[in-house]
Structure formats: structure tokens, C-alpha cells
Length: 414
Ligand SMILES: [Zn+2]
Image 1 (cartoon, rainbow, N blue to C red):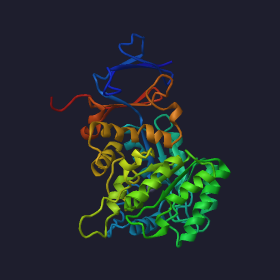
Image 2: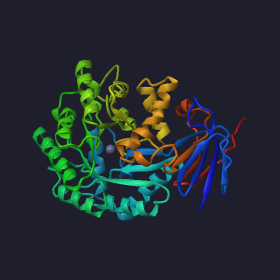
Image 3: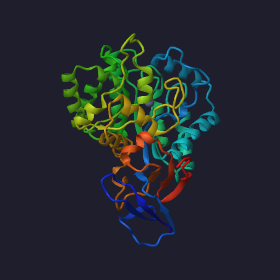
């Protein structure tokens, strides 16, 4: 039985440095200057220790496609179109290699849990689900992977997709995805929503939808959050629904926004902004004072909404940037959402740890407290409020009590 003692960890900015004693994969004891025996001792020398980062929304199956077909117009439409063309040429080995690279990069940056959205449609079929299920097994000691069946090409528009989603669930996917804006009419978008809610109910699974991804409120296919709140409450799905993007909500009048954000909080829906994609694709038609194109994070937090954020895409037609580093996305979010105070910068960290864990339904075993799973990351920063601006390396990544990543603690210049 392996025991690990982490000494002098900065767990909170307003508290003395802590020691964390780990046995059989769980945190057994936390305190100052613990004297317990351990097989291995790591002295953090005041470095920040966070629970493992949670990548709540990512597409490993379509990562690294940018080189093959760049998005020239920079619009969502061209991103979907280019990716659909490239999907037709996928092989198992190709999808496996690109997806594996995403997992490896994410783990090295401190991510210990990930929710992946492979496309399920008439082109990619179930290839992405199959690859990610294989990777989930291979990497099970390094990262927990949740797989979503994601109908990127729509459900009514893409023949056989609903059946394939159900088949993906039988294979082992554990979350129902959705993309109601990618249907031809509002009626079809609503039907799409009904179908994914029914599928989630039938298999008793959570829902994680791509919705309201526009920078205006004019197209009703991109204004469905209010309706989704109603559907969530009517069907008793509170706490089990996540909405990604929802950038259209940034264009609501303040009073309407306030009413809707209260309702989102009541429905227990998690909001998952995807800053790297949202900022890159939105605001394209603005000739001056270009909008930031994101969901209003601070106002939602003020209304009690559980808000997380995630990477979404790594170097493809939707987002030509990315290295699976949630701290980098956190910097982009903090800058564009005016989250600059020390307290707000710590909130940014909460969003990719505790808030995202709540979204993924793992909060009972997650966190830095006695009895929790020992998924931890040691960052080369001295204060939590500095992590987002330091962009530190992860000196240690610990998964279920085992050190799986170890990177130099030597600073280049003292
Ligand atoms: Zn996405």
C-alpha cells in the first residue's frame, strides 16, 4: 500500500501551508506539520496545490485538423462545413493518434478528469466514440474520461443519428449531447431538444448541449435557453443539464438577462462558456467596437448559476489555437470577462475545479479534504490568486494517489 505525504502545500491563500497525507488513493489527513510515515514525501515549498483540473468540454476527435483545411471566413458555418468534409476521410488510427495527443497534453497540464464530445452522425458514425472508449481504458490510471454522444450535424438533418446516439450509449458513452441550432427550422430545433431529453430520460443520463451559439438574439434556433430551463424543470432534470457556449445571452437586454439567469440557477443548469472558440468565431460582422462574443460570466455567477469553462477545440476550424491548457483558457476568460481582482482570479480556478466537477457529477469524491480522491496538481506558483497570471507548469500531477507527471521544480532565473 503506497502512502504519499505532500508537505507545505498552499491550499488556500488565507491559511497556513498544509500537509496532505494520502493512502490507497484517498486523502486521509490534512493538517500543519503532519508526522505520519510515508513511502514518498513531496515538499511543495509553498507551491499551490489544487484538486486535479476538470476539462468539462472538449472534442479530441477533431483536434489538430487546422493544417488540413483552415477556416478562411472564420465563421461557425465554415467550421462545421470544413470539419464535415475532413470527417469523411477519418481512419481509426488517425482519430486515435490525434485524440491521444490531446489527452497527453491535458494530463501534463494538470487535468485529471475530462468530458469529451465525439461527433456522432452519418459521416463519422461511431468512430469517435469507439476511439475514445479505447483511450478511456488505456489511460484509466491517468485520467477519468466521460464520453458524450454529440450530434454535431443535427439529428433531423443527419439520417440515423438518433439510433447511433443510442448505440453509442450501449457501447459505454454516459452523457447525451445535443446541437439544436444545427437544424433547418425552429420546429426542428425544438424536436431535436425533445429527442435528446427523451433519450437522457430513457437511459437515466445527464445532458450536455451546445446551444445559443450566436452573437445576436435574432434567430430563434439560437435562443433556446429559456425553453431548456422549462424542459429541465418539467422533467425533473435539475442538476443534470449543462449548456455550452450560450453566447447569444450576451446580447439580451439587462432586465431580460437577469430574469433568465435567475431561471437558469433555479433549473440547476451549468453554463459552460468555451472562450477560445466563442471569442474567435463571434463578432465577425462587427465593423467597429467588435463584441467579445461570450456569455456574461460575472452576471451569471452573481445570479447563483454554476458556471465552469473549458477548451472545446484544439487547433481546428472552430479554434485554430490551443494546447489543452485550462490555465491559458482561464487567462482568456479572466481578461474578456473583467475578472481581475485576486478573489475573481481564484473564482476562475474554482470554475475549472469545483464548478466543473459539479457539472460532471463527481463532486462527492472531488476536492482537497479528508476522504476525497487524491487527484491533485502542484503548480509552480505561491498564491492561488497568481496562478492564472503566472501560467505555471504543473510540477506534479497526482491521480488517485499516484504521481503520474513530474516536471522540474528548478526555475530558470532566480
Ligand atoms: Zn463543443
